[in-house]
Length: 335
View (spheres, helix red, strand yellow):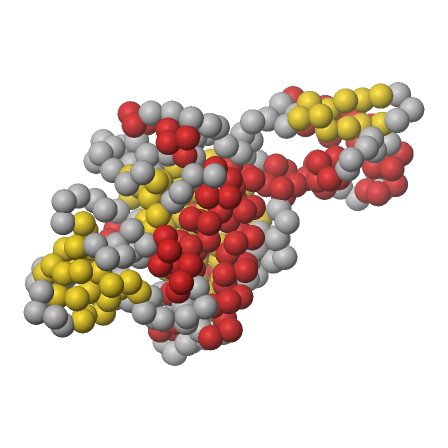
């Protein structure tokens, strides 16, 4: 049996006491030499592991921020999200990777994570790059059994999940700029993109991928690409703290599992609407709707159960704005 570094790290992380080398040998059906090699690999990666003769091994402390397959797997407390995990030190786009895995038949809940993205994908064909050690870039593969016109709401479910997870990790307030930008102190910390692939008959969903890029440990605005510098920020810039990205991923996926279950009960956002709107920065604000059919301004009233933003125009008309068609901006800036 192959010695799994992720499983050994998980056991060490979850144990309140020492774990003997013999226990690890018996658990994984390997030799003491194989266990010793894994322990040394973990030490080389920055894990402080205490070895005491006659007692075994104990994890004292891990790196402040480590993103690896072993670190992520040892952190996950989810039921199904991320139980099939792909980690890349560098990739073009986690969404592209997840779509390939979707075509190859990988299961519902598969997660792709990358330290570096060289061609991250955003709405309207935008792309961006992430530096090593800074962002949490991941994509979740879903195989829903509902009709295709419900899929756009998954983006809002993920937006709420990220906002709630960030608040739990940092203790700082976050907001959502409709439909899915996560904002801290009026600057963007996270964007996301949901892509759907349908069956050849175009009447059923084959799979959906929802990707997010969270700016976590960027230390200054200069680390962002020039075109987004005025509106971008990171958790570290705003709070002064460094965060473990694997721990944040676990919190996001846990929140998504819970929020997605609520969504599936009604196949709309009625069960999440109140919590989403509590984060909605556009709520009660004057907005400019950049509609290809013609721009207009109005007051954002909140979202309806389908996730559409209700904008009251100057003539009193209440107009539902669909996320896939238009962009919404504040009258005097990004938010």
